[in-house]
Image (cartoon, rainbow over all chains, first blue to last red; front, side):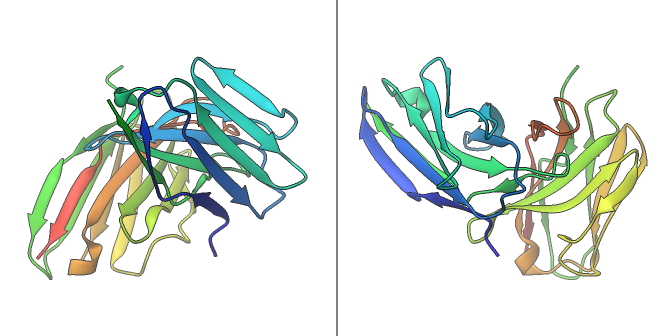
Length: 111
Length: 115
């Protein structure tokens, strides 16, 4: 059972555009929602995270929006750059650090 | 701290052979996670250790897979016998924040190819 559903699977935007990646979850026990960024040949790295009692969190050009009632959250990348080209994973956790990952979104930012 | 160190980075083996993947977690952290990444199934949690004890191994595919964490500075994931469908990138990870944050430091992975 896929507990965290992520869309789209791939995304292409022009430099300066605002890619949006969406995730939906089912398990209301989830209490922490991190996003990870992965470059080819590397392990995933924590990018930004949010708790369900907060509706929005910004860190630099990255913003998470959270809708608890809809059980959905999304990542926005403002003023996207070619260096942001990577695979992005949303995730959810409960009972400690047992992360459940979404399926990933491969983002390409064209110059 | 050098972060999470995994070896080997790449392993090519033939079906039926034993494969051992190694991980040195971040020092001072006695929790460790093993994940497997494939195109078809994405990132899957295989097993989770806390205080060197396996807490949840429900993600281990079958008896061919085994994992140990004999001490806080070393863990192994063994596949015996290996099969082509085991081909994947295997990651281990250490928690970076408190126990209940979901913030993990991942190693760079071990890419396994079983022919």
